[in-house]
Image (cartoon, helix red, strand yellow):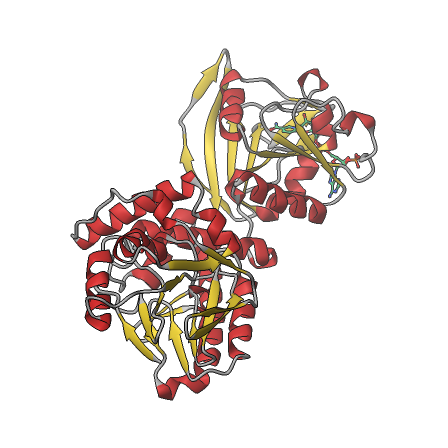
Length: 467
Ligand SMILES: NC(=O)c1ccc[n+]([C@@H]2O[C@H](COP(=O)([O-])OP(=O)(O)OC[C@H]3O[C@@H](n4cnc5c(N)ncnc54)[C@H](OP(=O)(O)O)[C@@H]3O)[C@@H](O)[C@H]2O)c1
């Protein structure tokens, strides 16, 4: 068996496996398709035939060269997982592939023919995990390596060569490393173990190429180490950065700065990194500092309420509350929840209510409630519920608003990094108070300046607490 890099523009992305039947591993970028075809023809001769393309997953930089390959060799068959087969039928996925292909072509300064028929991106043969197929004189074993995507497959050809999906990690030429566990970090760990368990003579790493002879014995140790190291780096950056955009910029500097933008434009990196951040938060929630926001209106002595009611109602304060919390998760104590106007939940928000013993209280039940209402019996239960709601609604920590009263502010303050406080310059009679934010390490970062409503003077202040 002979293995040749036929990426065409650049290297390490597309490999030709020659035999009586000729196989291609991946189909590459759309803009590189002409150069790839030229490289394949150089190897196979003008009359040579390409029989099959083995795809590791459904991303644009792996499949978008397929239409051109089909134009050249109309009889070829494409192989991938069943999930990948479904994905390349979705109009939304096909549109994203066109857009990212166009951006990659622009970054590379190369033209590409966008007139291909989306149907040419189809997967002809869907493979299951652990399935073996015969393609001409080759035996191809496919095994799932879920992590980069849920549709990722790696292959072993003729029991000799392993063609790895990106899930196991991508090595740069200069010892650099790009983590790739977009959807499943634990899956990436398992994929390395699964790959390690199959003895082969040659290992081809995605976006890299053959693993050198000297490196083959310890490649899986190296990839395992790099994977774990990248997880620690990402968690540190995410915990230290003031917000996710700043974390993404820092991750770009660490992992992507040295990468040629032709191979991975910035947008593709940001999409991938944001996805990895989400995956880590989902799979290792205990490792992350929370960044919930607190929102309150407090008087000169930090008073917030009296006899179960607010001290005063200021329209501009209510408008700010409505604007900041719309569509988000609002965490409330049972007493505050039951004091809401009309006894109804806050509309257009998820109402997460804390109650130690009132979960069976009918007034808290979701029956007859227009808005989303969830009742949790403890802070840990609320944190777990918040995690599942964030994932379900595609929200982030900063979309969780701790809205009082006093008991709830105290219970959730350790999980807050930002506080929006309407500071009212008056001393009311009060029996509920906001904790002393300054004493808890918060500092004012922004203030509105004095505002008035009739004879009430107040200002809006944003506090932040450093990690
Ligand atoms: N100015 C403002 O911005 C603002 C905002 C909100 C509220 N407020 C005012 O604050 C006052 C209410 O504050 P509050 O401290 O008395 O009541 P609260 O915080 O609204 O509610 C307290 C109740 O929450 C539940 N709870 C508290 N900690 C819990 C925990 N760790 N696990 C499970 N459940 C827990 C308990 O419910 P069960 O008794 O059912 O077990 C507890 O009785 C009112 O006057 C209200 O108007 C002011």
